[in-house]
Length: 227
Image (cartoon, rainbow, N blue to C red; front, side, top):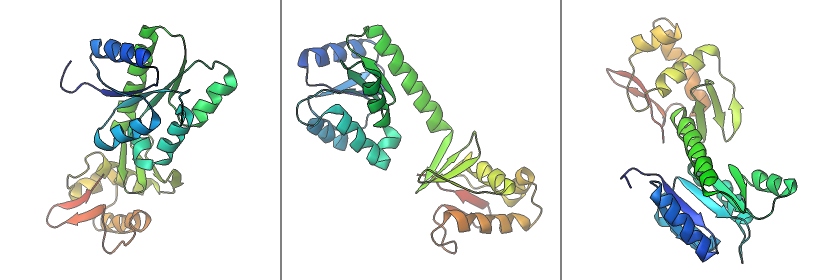
């Protein structure tokens, strides 16, 4: 197992199945932690970081559906924990319930271990692409591929110049970009860049005069700080 292997949390009250999953996924290069219940899973998530959760739906006490909903209600957790739900319930309505709860994929029991592995790989691949193409700062998220800014999921209207300007800054978060380079990318000339920055701050800053995310770096230009 390599040091940067993805870390998977398996949540299942079936000790035998959980043990088999841990062994199989470990043999295929993943780090695996097992939780026997929703309560234990929450305890594990407080102290460890996971890249994906494999979650059984039917468990005593709080079931997997309830756990998935509560994770998705937590904005920070929902951004960092894809969920693959395992269940013996194969009806389409059951799958819909799982997807509506926010799970990323749904696999019915019994299943082939190889299919589980392929689904995990696909979910992690999608999560990596989404992470690399999306910059998050506070309540805002900027999609680099769409040049789309959202606040808590609601689209924030930007002019074409503001989109270009924000995309240029978001491509290298934490790195100051000079006014000249911003001018070249956005087409705004001279001090027009400053005007665009001011307008953009009004849309993303709680206090535009004391910006938290879109800051001025004296002698260097402007920088966008992401979470």
